[in-house]
Structures are given as structure tokens and as C-alpha cells.
Amino acid sequence: MEQQRSGSGSSQSPRSPSAQPFLSVSVTDPVKLGNGVQAYISYRVITKRLDYSLFWQTNLPEYQGQEKIVIRRYSDFVWLRDRLFEKYKGIFVPPLPEKSAVEKFRFSAEFIEMRRQALDIFVNRIASHHELQQSEDLRTFLQADEEVIYSITMLLAKVKLV
Image (cartoon, rainbow, N blue to C red; front, side, top):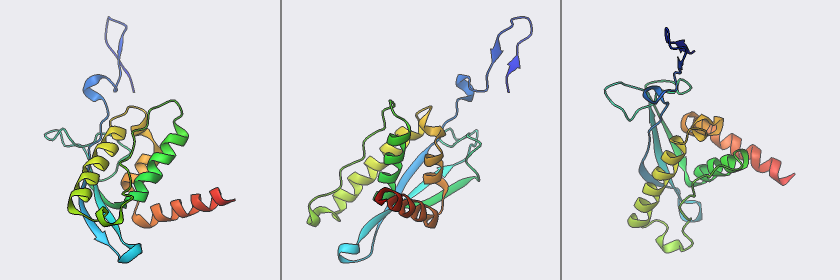
């Protein structure tokens, strides 16, 4: 909704710099789950709603609740990047950190922390991009329960096989 300024004829949009939508996302608490070849690392992904005293939270109305915490694994970040890359041709989608090719380093504390930091940078770069932050896929990634993400990725995997 735009407001007219009296006398000047110019308008002030809710997207003016002071009202520019923003998100802040934290990737935290890596945890190893499973054993052997089934083992993987999960991460807590936290998104918060706007509190005018705390500028790092969101003022985007599509994001519900004061705080949303979801659990994601590396493959979920891959899904998000692939979806954005496919839908936003011509827009730079940030790269993901590489997957460890060396099994013995995959679960080392240093590797896990470096990957967590890189995933945090990855998702915050997307969340700070004026077009990518509006993506339904980003919203799903940040807010959908783990079962929903799993169902979506399985459905898309089946579609790719056909």
C-alpha cells in the first residue's frame, strides 16, 4: 500500500530503505545422527520475526510466528540451491560448501564447524537477496517441518527419474 505525500506528488513505498524486508537466519548446533554409511550431520536452522529492538529478525509477513526452528541436513541445502538455480535463471545463487570426499574427515569437529559456518553464510546470502528472499522454496526450507521437506525431495527425485 503506497501513501501519497501531500503537495509533492511523489509516493513513499513500504519498500523504502527503512521498510526494506530482511531476514536473519542462523545455522547452529550440528549433530551427528545415524551410524556407518547411514550417518549424517543435521543442523538447527533458526528464523525469527521482527522485534524493533533487535534488527536481525524478520519483518517479512510470509514468515509466521516469533521464531521458527527446523532441522536440516546438507542434502536439504542442496535441494534449496538446486531449486533456486532452476527457477532464478540469470541470478547468482551462492555456492554451497563442498561435500567431504574423504570419509575420515567427514565427521571431524573442524570440518563440521567449517561446513556449519559456510552453510550459515550460504543461507544468509540468499535471505539478503531482494528476489531470492521472496522465494517459496526458501520459505519452505526455513519453515516446513522435516517430514514436509523429506516428502518434497522424494517427490522431486521420482519426477527426475521419469
